[in-house]
Amino acid sequence: MGNEFQLGHLLARSQYAGSDSSELDLRDYDVLVLGSSWDSRSVWLSKQVNIRSSIGVLITYLQEDPFGRQRRHNIILLDFLQLTCTKVYQICVDSHDIVKMWQQLAPRIVAAELQLNRPLRICVDLTAIPRFCSLAALGCLLANGRANQFTFVYAEGEYDDRRTKEETVTFHEGEWRAEPIPFFGTYDPLKKRHYIVSVGFEGRQTYRAVLDGEPNRVSILFPRPGVKRNYERRASEQNRKLIDDYCVPKTQIIYACAGDAVAAWKNLHLASLERTFTENVFFLCCGTKPHALGLALHAISLHDPIILYYVADSHTVTDVQLAGKFWRYDITDTSSIVPSTAF
Image 1 (cartoon, rainbow, N blue to C red):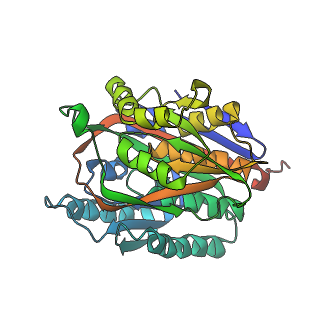
Image 2: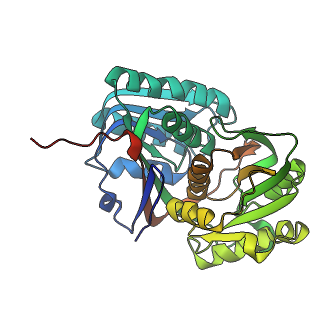
């Protein structure tokens, strides 16, 4: 199961694996970037026995959970990287200071490219890394030709089903602050504003984020099918007010599998909702991480859209279990692949 889509020099493939994540067949990279958190999914990649990398980077956070999960996961992932990578770096930052996080991650990646003197093969686990950093890495390295082969991986999660409609799953507390992801988009104050919003469980915060942006037009990227059928219903309930209040027509609601970044990019392209000559286009990443990656691929192909990441006042310790569904997304810049020569 998976998708393939190519636009110009950018080629993307998605691959899905069920309960056996080894089917993703992850092997040799120049840089491997992982994130540790209290989320039990953050250590799933440590069971990949064939993966190897010249450089490993582990992002850890100053905030800790009351159960000590993150501390245990830090140890598991550091041990894993020391076994699979030639050189290992650890970044420890405040989880809310995403700009500083990127400022510490970027030099490690760029130094690898300078050392090897060729475009990188890089693997990033989306599961426990903020969208800001993973998408900034994609934008930076592809835009500057520093990488020609990107692999993103992701482990889907299951959440507590014993919640009422009012007790929906939340990952953040307080208000959200918009932070534009670097290397994406341009803004023209004379143009109108079109928001394309990937939605999920956190409908109230998403609605407030859109409201603060004062868009003239709103479109939706919706997770269908979801990880579980009732997740679609929850997402629909949580975002009903946004769709109704902004009179979003059915033709401006784009559907893509919650875990398939390539399907999201493909469907966004086929819908072609952007009017870049008259509108500033903003992509709001309020849904799944794979959908955020799909938005980033679409932004790269269009050049113009601005991608907004929302930083919350604090994070909620939410019980998330592995859903037994794993994804791999391979993005290739075919313009920088040197063809082999037969003799």
